[in-house]
Length: 333
Image (cartoon, rainbow, N blue to C red; front, side, top):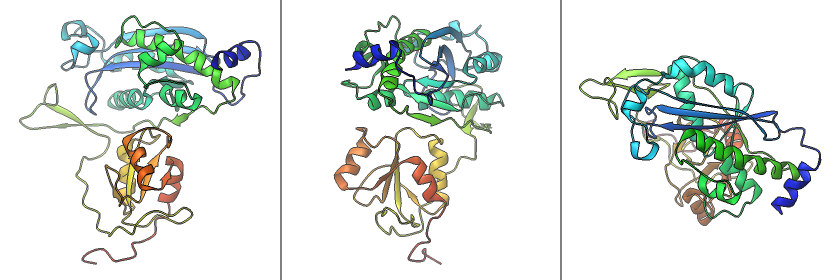
């Protein structure tokens, strides 16, 4: 039982030596979910290696644009008008993250928003690993009906006071993470740590006659590399991937779930290798790449139904190093 394992750790059962020495439990509220959206508030609870709270920090951030869904986060333009810009709080935020594992609920979202803000500020956040509490709850086999933060909180008896307020969400997550971490330690469970790769470039491209979504000065963040529409794969689909053999140009590859590498970058590498990136799973799909093959996402479920081969991100990265040429020449070759 979870309570028994938690009590055992508290009573002095040896802590896994491989576990991190400190964590930064993070929540950010944003103007939306797109790549050009901005952080409008951020909170960090710093925890020691055993999940005990050391301190906490919270700030508003002026996004220099419309605040987005006020009915969700409650932060109006008037409230944010006098708040600091992200570059003004970047150093303090970084100090809270430095040397720690970033912990968040759906961590890929929080990490990507943070990485983009630092890239806009022409710097990098000092964090190299992240841990998603959704993934941890799956590793622990917690009997949750869904993976919402309020559900995880209720499971551990943590009371939410202000949902979608960064400071309270971070507090709730820190309180739910502590017993999760102790249960993992008691069972010597592998923590689902993923690499955080900072962005190294960000461009603001003017859009003549248009404003960005939400409108801020007619500029739109297009990413850390040129935006483009991918051309159709020129190679025929050679069929499914076979374990132990190389990938072959023309294979249809789909991705699901959280990845260490930014998803667009991972897809671009696949395209550059001559693979066809698919947004869905069908009987024609050659391979599904996911770090959570036991999840219930629609792609994973369909992969099981169709018998589609599945590999994790690390294995896929190895396979990308030696993709075999197409068995049939590309059209026009």
